[in-house]
Length: 123
Image: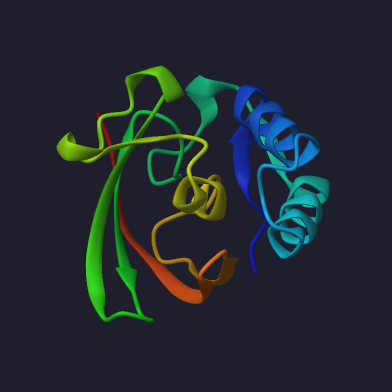
């Protein structure tokens, strides 16, 4: 699995979610490992194909066989009916810092899911 690439703000956000126990133990273990190896960059240096806040992300959920689209936004801008999800939601936590083409198995609360990142687009 490749190392995640995140801004310092996103790095701190993930660390905070883990510290506050907003994730499962399995997710916490994975996230802590990812953070240890993460590459931190300035926002302007973040590649355009990396999952982060204010980006539209299209995923292939191999577990359900469905394509899913998320727009990850600041928590106070979440509007699920419009496809806008908080940057702290489970799917964001799983995919933050990853790039187009990455495939991951993630221990969501409802069970493991295999997710592939199909596209990432700035909003």
